[in-house]
Image 1 (cartoon, rainbow, N blue to C red):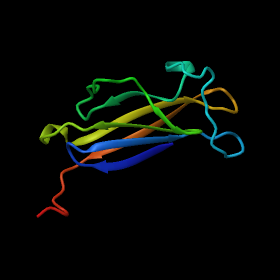
Image 2: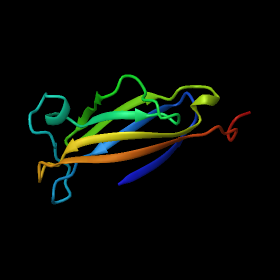
Image 3: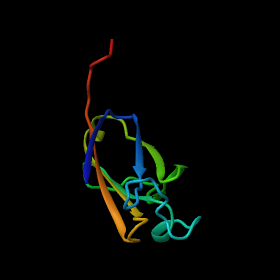
Length: 117
């Protein structure tokens, strides 16, 4: 599944990942609680910038908000070089199958004067 969101340079991007079981209810998908990485909470493995470079500070473990609900934010770079399409890779374990799942989120970084004085 791919989601596309639009932000402006310098804005904080908020990524929220919901982990559902086979019945459609939120459930923690990790196998070993408190362990980060492949057997831990969902992670943002990488954020790829428009010039195909990787943003620093990734991979990063997402913060648990509630059962099966995780959050992580980061700030987009500023300036004209920040414009373009960013790709965010999110990984987690499916609580029903224990298979590794991936979601690709696209962040369009555009300049807009809408709402500015």
